[in-house]
Image 1 (cartoon, helix red, strand yellow):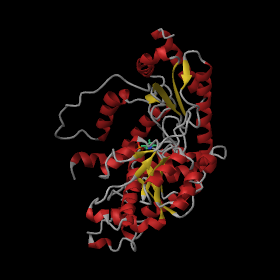
Image 2: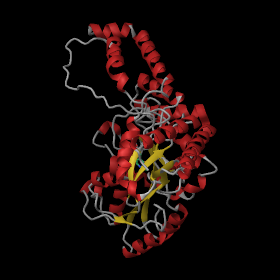
Image 3: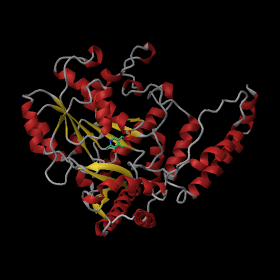
Image 4: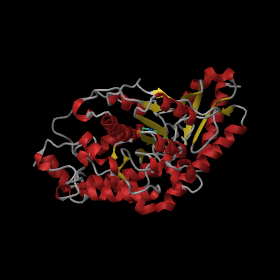
Length: 470
Ligand SMILES: *Cc1c(COP(=O)(O)O)cnc(C)c1O
């Protein structure tokens, strides 16, 4: 064995102890770690020949990188839709790394890791009150979950026309209908060879809404004259957390032939709260659903899962089967995740989720979800009553979409946001909503409390004063 590796192996206890101590330091100060940095690092350095060992590498990390790492997992990172990591999820993530299994088969080869994944999906279905008719698996993020689901939808579409797109390639144009898709679904259309321009945009409901207009949807369905199509719907939109009407869509499904996909990356967690569960009523009739765990479930990146109805199992295997390897056997007989999704070798991403669900249960996630919404509403209350800001849309769930008050300040919105973010107390992202420049604050982190909302509001007010915005 290489001598440095040998030394590390002898030192493993101390190495892990030092990493733990450093990690605890970070977690204990996460409230005061800046939410952004303007510093950068020189990335052109030379790789050393002989290696310095883990403890010395840890020193370099501490000196050079750690001071520049921002508090993205902290309570005031409200940009994008960014979750943190609960203690249980960190424990599960560490053990995933330590055991380092390759989560693939339910029999022999991979030990029980794929079964741990099955059990975790079973728990998630219970958390979200979804039926067992869905089969699920873990992928790196909602983008890959949308990709997996839409890839099977693509295969379904081909089959409706008597084609096997997985084998032949795409031999007929697809019909995709959607109202306010997340940008990642459009990226998936590009990756899947469907084409990012090749979708029909359905109108949204009149007024300040991003949800699909059901009568315009039905009109567009009729225009297809009985051709099959794929519907990409939202639970929820990232700007204003608006939900499509799933009861209405499920009624259309009784009349028309389509694959129904729901991107519920963060909004699916509305199902954890009796107060907000109605927003996803009817979603159980979808063919496929995308859900992120590294957002509202507050587990470390990269963690998301897809749910696809078991009745589509054959289409899923046709899409993803890795059957050229004879030792893998019949994909429908010998279950192996590599025949059901894009990756072959896979981290056991289910374990941090498994730990979290065992540790906190249904009540824990109801509390996280309801607290996030409560914090969003407190921030909304400040925006609504202030003279300097105005809401761009009502706060329906956990995202507050707002801007500087008055059209005369539209040109200053991005400048304002840059200054606010540079102060490093709170981080938010820019958006454009109904042709107006705006700002989004998304509440998903389990740590966020009233004091964080207060600190953020003070930072907003200071920025207004500094820039002399009126
Ligand atoms: C975040 C998000 C995505 C993309 O998720 P990743 O995990 O970043 O790949 C897709 N759809 C919605 C609605 C999202 O909020």
